[in-house]
Length: 291
Image (tube, rainbow, N blue to C red; front, side, top):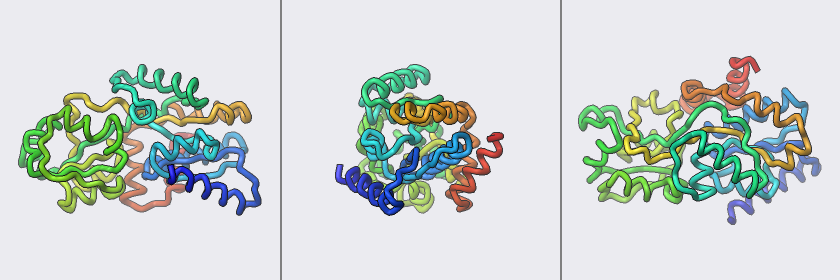
C-alpha cells in the first residue's frame, strides 16, 4: 500500500509540474518490457485516432499497483492479462477455457470495479518455465514433470509477484510435486534469463512471449499438468473515462485480435536484446499492422 501511495504522489507531482493540467487520458503499464510496449502502443494509437491528450505512466509497478491506480483514477487504461486478473486480483480458482476466463473477468471487473475489458489483443502470454538448452538435452527435459524428477539440488528463480499469487509458486510446486532442497531466488523479471544463462538458477519463471528465450538458447518446458490458466492480453479502461470520451472505446478495440505470439517475441527482443527505444518499436509495430 505504501508503494501505491507513493505512485499516486508521484503522479500528482508530475501533473502539478505540468501546470495542473491533467491529460485527457493517462495510460499506464506494469514494470516489464512487454507491458511497457503495450502501454506505449495504446498511447500512440489513442493519440492518432482520437486527438485526445495522452499522459504516460509506464513501468509504474506490478499488478496490484496498477490495479490500485486504476481504482483511484490515477490511471485510465493499462494492459492486463486475463489469467492474472482471475487469480491475482479476483482470487478465483484457475479455469482453462479462454472464453470463459475472459467473460468471468470482464463481468466481475465491470460490476465490482467499474472497469471495462476491451477486445483481447490476440495473444496469450502464459508463464513459461524455462531451462538451459544443454540441460534439457542432457536430462531429457521436455515437460515440467520431467524437471520435477530432477528438481532436487536445483534452484528456481522467479519474480516477487509469482511468489505471492494464487497461480504462483506454492500451487506450482504442489501440482508438480517439486522436491527443491535449495531456497528459491527472487529475481527481477528483466534479469531472469541472464540469471539462468549465468548458472545462478536452473529453472526460470518467465513469460512465453519474451524474446530473450530464443536469443539465449533457452527452452520452454510444456505445462503438461495444465497448471496455468490462459493469459490473454487486453486493455482495461475505466468506465468513467469511456463515458467521458465515447470515441475511446472504438479506438482501443481497433487493436483487438491484431497481435500474435511471434509478433510479441520479436518486439520484446527488439527492446531487451537489440536495445531499441520502446517508442520506436511501438510505432513500427503499429505501422506494420496498417495503423
